[in-house]
Length: 63
Image (cartoon, rainbow, N blue to C red; front, side, top):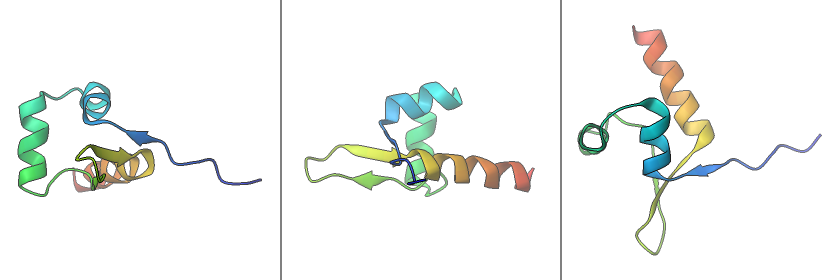
């Protein structure tokens, strides 16, 4: 079976899913503590679903 395409999430979708304020998420990005993001040529930022899940798992292991 072919691997499903990795969903690209917007920042509003990510913050709604993990339940943190927008300012907190941007602070994490600034401190390089958030999930890895991709900046598109038009300036939009996207986060792959797989990267968000990997990042969340890593947080759980550190707790």
